[in-house]
Length: 344
Image 1 (cartoon, one colour):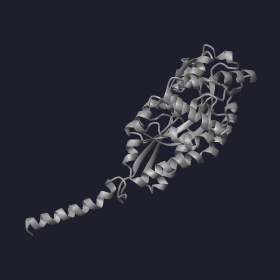
Image 2 (image 1 turned 135 degrees about the horizontal axis):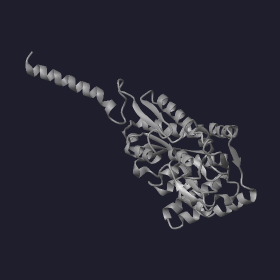
Image 3 (image 1 turned 180 degrees about the horizontal axis):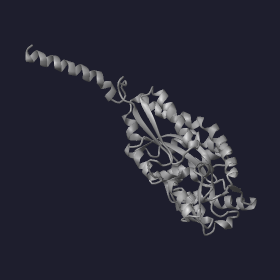
């Protein structure tokens, strides 16, 4: 065989192979039969709760609907780092999905904290309606678009409460206490008005801080106290009911853009679908955890009715004060408030 014939045949074979492999390499094209699954890492700060269950459901849906082209890996309880590190990982594409309360994204856009406005949500069902509202989702899911994030889902988790080492039975008991908050100016101003010192803190640091006496208590959710076994460090939970705790599902925009179009649609569609499907489970799980907290020796405290009313009245203009001199934040806040009123 002459060299020229051999070279021509080799070149033709290489071209045929390249053409066969090309669809698996280009976004938006058919997946190669022998391609390895794409890894989708899910990160979130809690464990064995409704957030964890949502992640399991979402992961299973994505694996099924992608025909195995995406392989999910779940990392609960901040295994991939503190909440700020988890968010950075999603922005840079090292982590593909984060499920975190939106307030912790305020360093990217301060409008992420809007759903933490006190008095915004009046009940479990109301919170679920707000999370599912198209106008609310349009605002919240678009916020990180220019900072490496793609909002894919939003759901209501539960009302917040205050857990403390010593009982908070009256508004006066807040005075002088160091209380952990989410990264939200709404929560900061609210605690300051109660006479407490607010301390923004990632969830993974909260329990050690309570145990060591660095803080006196924390704003969080009941399902965190039960699943992460807070009862040995602090057993008193004051049911303020405010603010509401939501979860936002943020995908890495970089990773999502690398996917074929059909997979982009799948990860978006499944996030939205599972954010609605989790609602019945979420409501029942919260009820069950209330019983568990008491069984483990924990105590629920309600403020006297007149003090609860006084607290809510004092919180009434927190949103207006925080947003007063920030036009973009103010406009989005008014839109969220209008939606919440419409859905009551």
